[in-house]
Length: 286
Image (cartoon, rainbow, N blue to C red; front, top):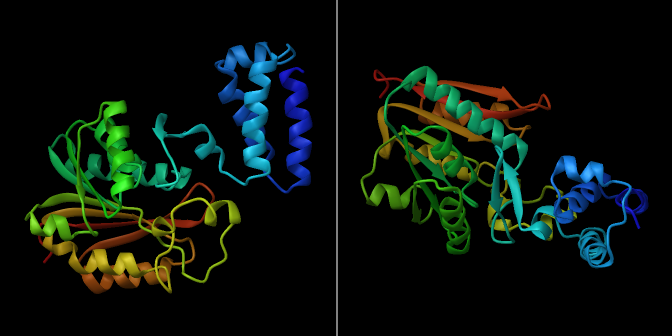
């Protein structure tokens, strides 16, 4: 069987099962052992029995067992970097890449050329923290997570990608407060799905609930972080969050509650949905 034939057959099967056809192409490409150019050059060539079996088994895990493509492969690309992922960490999303881009842009605007300390709260796979450390050498990056298994994955990713990040186990800001650490930038993509909100089965059945659900309203972790953020932030600071597209008003209300002098704004993601909040506090803020 050729790659073209396999993809056509399995894409139709995916469509019948209500699954994403693009996942079939991704699995086939990634497991072919070929780069993009080589893959499309070999599109009409016979796959080979052993390789075809490996690809077919992976496709069945996605179509039949409802396992996310990234968990099947064991990695996910984020900002161009391959991050190891497993069932202990959330799969990085494109929207979170935008969060990282905005943090880098805000750094350039407010701290350009300065050494700064940055903390990623609830780091998971380490995608945000590691990417910031890789992209901006002047950032000294810390990252926290309450999940020890998640920190194992994050540390492995930092080592693999050659990033210097200090990982600290603990609940939200608590381990930072205890250590009396101070930061210029706080970034977080905390769990923000409301407890009773309907979630796709492929997400709910595979990704860690501790990284998905944010209490009854989805706002619990933002409230906890912002209520205590003053304890770990320097007078001039930037706070950046990813949040639910339906919570713009609520996020601005929480920001005004804890940082009334701060400049808070919500930015739309690539899909036109309210997704990222930036709060800037300058030296004159309380």
